Length: 636
Ligand SMILES: [Zn+2]
Image 1 (tube, rainbow, N blue to C red):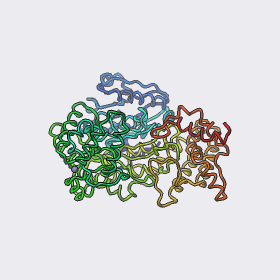
Image 2: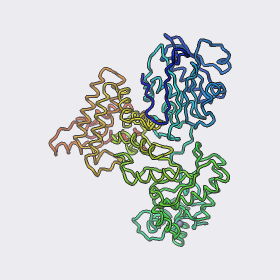
Image 3: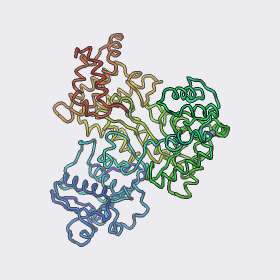
Image 4: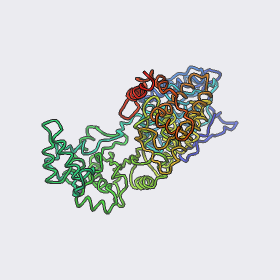
């Protein structure tokens, strides 16, 4: 068993060797399959704590073969189980009495306490989530259980399981840990992965123009609240006056009648204001937003709840107000974020008077991603930086713009980061950023980022999704871990003998994508065009053949390898003729499927069950497209 759950400053793990004259420090969970502990549930345990406690019982029973009881605090202290050690789950008067040195009332919401006291064990933490995380930390990091993916676990076997003396107190450095994705959003995953499971976390809060300053309500009456477009621009240049005018005139004609666009065009021509973004200095806009936010807080709507955040964020697009005040701030601050932070500050100052614990969130993305030179967000303003425009090929720290922006924002504000892991236009194809996420988590931790949301993949055959989810979740909980070691651990546990071959596959894909030093890997790529050559595809195909051979005879592992292989099989189909031509031109082998319809037949049973393939499309749509594409060549 591996006890090195340290390597980070915040962990305090001590192993006290019991001297012969004092109580033996080890706690026996079972001896030869006979229970040696009872589990004691705190009287005010939440539903989530109760179900986590049931998991603790269930897995300790699976490991030891013993039958364990869950009892109440009164029974535990009445001397009914004199021979047994007690595992006190949750913050209770008994736990507090046994461990008075734990500052119980100062624990962070996600902070855990795992502590041996005189032959008993306390498994508890801050409210509301710490105890739940403590249970899954004990099961995983102290006892060795692994939850790799739905239906894929490793449970050790030890009829005489015992624990050494433990003294752990740990708070994860990221207070919000969210992965948007097919696996990570399952309740089971959120528990085992110690993600922010009970937060109402609006991953993509809507902007002010669509949420509060709605055109139909305010634009005609108060055009001066909205962004001013001084420059003419051109009809072909998005976000300019001429372009907007052309678009709205088009809408006036083509939107179903009656529509408001005739009136909007009149206001636009008269005022040169567009409803797509507010003017952040407009007093009328600020007052209206403040009023709406106070109502949102009172109703508990549209917010994250721990901490509670309400949003003063921009609408979509690069619309920037060109009034004199906005221009002056932009010049001085070097970024439009200066204007937005000034507005957020003014509103946050008022919000604080009524709701001192609520944060006013402002997004940093597109034209506001660069931080302001001098303006400082107030202490109750939270910045949410979306790494939307970043190349995905390498870690954030290697790109000067993002690296600087992240560091600066983290140094002046409470900062949450929206990171991107998947390729949203095709979750299935290889997206060679496999070694990026772990480094990002380390970097975010080094610079003091407070919360993370990772946008990941969906779909049952999404590119190595179980691996990505597991490693990212481990790094979110403890970013001081070594991501490569975690990847190897996952590969060994999930793919068995194929593990080193899959690592070789990922390295080959990453090398392929790095061949061209100007390669841009976006989060919205339709195909592997631009980086994957027929040689890369041949290498990948050979590796998957080897991986399949390595696990031959093992049905479960073979299925997992086959599922991973779909990234390559389907990528052959995406660019089939192109790859054939490339192989012929270069005089090299073509290891793509000789008959593409075989690939289609192989995935046909999953047409309805593989879920999404694209951010807005199901796998069935992709399947039908491929079937149609190859029907003429296969004669179907
Ligand atoms: Zn303005």
